[in-house]
Image (cartoon, rainbow, N blue to C red; front, side, top):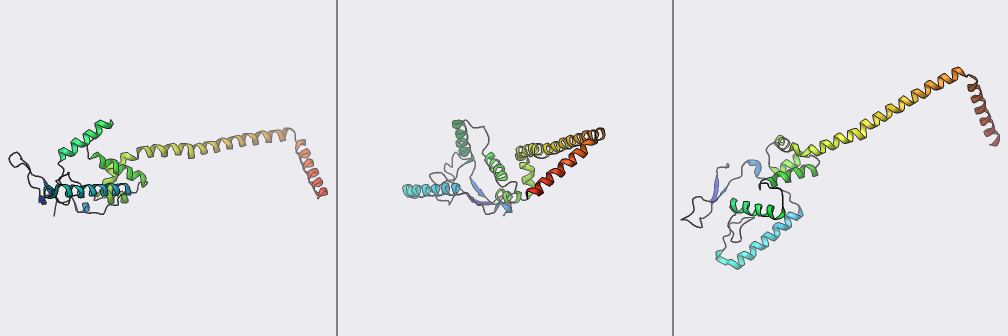
Length: 209
C-alpha cells in the first residue's frame, strides 16, 4: 500500500451537511511501520485512556462506535483536525505558551531526544521514521546550536587558556634563566659559595645518619 491507499471510510454522522469524509489511510512510507519504545509516563497515560474508553463503552452501549482507535472521542469516533487544533490552541492560550502548530510537538520531541542521546542520530531516526539519517541532521541541526556554543566556550577555558598559560610560564622561565646567566657572569664567586653550601649540607646529613 502507498499513502494514497484508503484503509477505511468512517460513516458520515450528518449526511445532509457533510461535504467531506473522514478516512483512515495507509502510512506515509514503509519506514512508518516501526516499533516505538515509549517512556513509562506515556505508557501510563495510554492505560488511563484505555480505561476511559472501556468505561465509555459500558455507559453508551450500542451508541459507542468502536473502531479500535488508540485515541478517540468519547463516542469512539476519530478526532477531526479542527477539533485537535481547537483543543491545542485552548491549551496554549490558557497556559500562555508560545503559539505553535500541533506538528511542532514532533519537532520538540525529536530535538529533545537528540540532546538526551547526545546526538545519536540512528537511535532518534528509529522513532521519527525518517528514511535517512541525513534528513534528521538537516532538519534538526539548529537544535545543537547551544551545544556548539558550549563547545566553543570549553575550547576557550579548557584548551586555549591552558596553552596561553603554558606560554606565559615558558616566557617567565626564559626571562629568569637569562637573568641568572647574567648574574653568574658578573659574579662567578656566587657559584663557588653555592657549591660549598651544598657540600656542607651533604656532610652534615651524612654525619647525622
